Amino acid sequence: MASVLFDHVWKRFGDFAALKDFHLDIEDKEFLVLVGPSGCGKSTALRLLAGLESVTEGSIFIGEERINDTPPRDRDIAMVFQSYALYPHMTIKDNIGFGLRLRKVPRQEVERRVSDAAVILGVEGLLDRKPGQLSGGQRQRIAVARAIVREPRVFLLDEPLSNLDAKLRVNTRAEISKLHKRLGTTFIYVTHDQTEAMTMATRIAVMDAGIIQQVGTPQQLYDHPANTFVAGFIGSPAMNFFSALVTESEGHLELRGDTYSVRVPLDRAGEIRQFKDRELLFGIRPENIHDQEFVPRGVNAVPIEVVVDVTELMGNEVFLHLLAGENKLLARVDPRTGLRAGARTEVLMDLERLHVFDPATTAVLVSASDA
Image 1 (cartoon, rainbow, N blue to C red):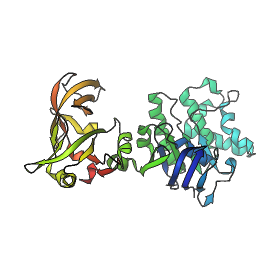
Image 2: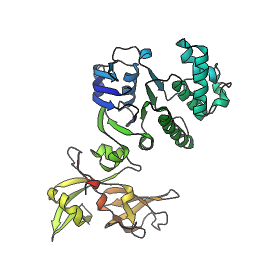
Image 3: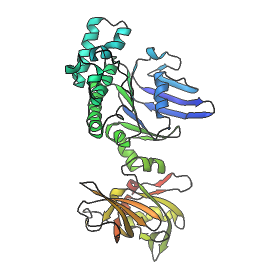
Image 4: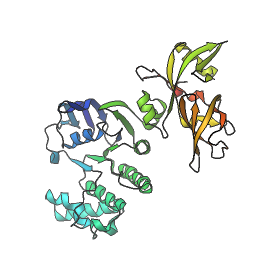
């Protein structure tokens, strides 16, 4: 079994706690992604698992074995770093097999594993070259191949795509996803890029300031964010947030801001009415704000007056930066929109997809998919 358990782990550097009561159970053969902003502690968690840092409090297990005091070389882990860390004077073949030779693996076995890994990563034609003769994407594949030949219980990948250009990142993350399915091994992947997390993970652990904010499948985090941090981090572009007072007038529930008011649909009114006369924080994703000329079929949206501040043409869609009083909103709309900067207009908000948060604790009160 290659399950991994961080059992209430703390990591302190002097007075600074990089990880705070970090508890995470990773299943055998899972692709778990740790995601969060720089400095949130995700790479520290990986380094603790690899044995590159020592645990201050708590325990780490691989399977049934507690590994806090196990030397790194005996943990049966392979790690791929952001930097390729290839030996420039060695051929690619020697780079891939170097770790096996250090462990006194028989030569024929080294040859077999290097050949198999090269085929899996599609680099069999590069084995006689030196790293300086390869592109960034090729060198990253070599770094992954060097990890594969170890045949470890757990793969650790620390932002392995951050040095690649946008097109290569898309291609390489697809390769890594296929590799995980092919090898059937536990993968733990660290990134600050929520797109990588959403497209690759079996489950995602969202981190901030050394604390796990939420763990779940990509769709669970998107539909049921636990708080405003997760709601704003998962999804691209990020969720819009705005404050409003919940009021009722002539039997209709409304969200009132300083310069705007939107009526709550009847099928959402029941769950929001419990917050009547409270000022709450509301969240709506850019794809749920529509140009009134191009509203998707079946969407029951309500109007809100806005001024178009900036437009961004993306080809297959347009991002509209909107002002509703003091609130800034971002809408992702149909590319055929005729709205341009400076226009004063109404856009339609799909309040069926509205999230409600407590402004004091930032915790979610009602998720859109709870409706």
